[in-house]
Amino acid sequence: MPRALTDNGRVELRLRPEDKATLTRAASLKRLDLTGYILGAALPKAEADIAEAERLTLSERDSLRVLALLENPPAAPDRLVRAAKAGFTLP
Image 1 (cartoon, helix red, strand yellow):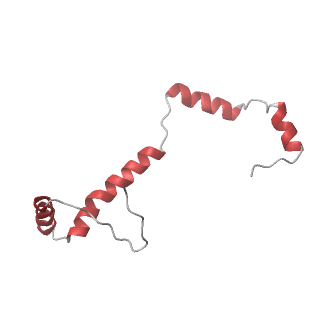
Image 2 (image 1 turned 90 degrees about the horizontal axis):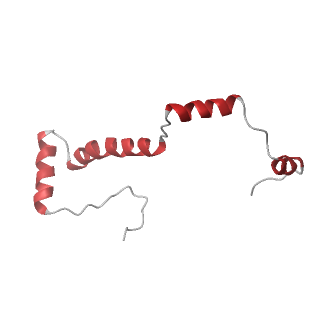
Image 3 (image 1 turned 120 degrees about the vertical axis):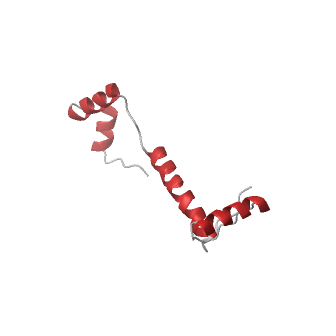
């Protein structure tokens, strides 16, 4: 179960001793501390994963449909028009 997030910016990572030794050796070869080495590898991957999750890719057919709807939107349903005229707002 994940631990509660704290505001101090610390992250704990449990590693096997041989994995830590590998990371430490690689970091020293790049003349980085262990934190800098791990962040240098992990942050670009995290940013790419977020960008991929937030991006929507449409097929050509769907893109054309969206553009057509933007240029010629359908008429608002009567129920929506009545709600707008009555001043209805969402909570």
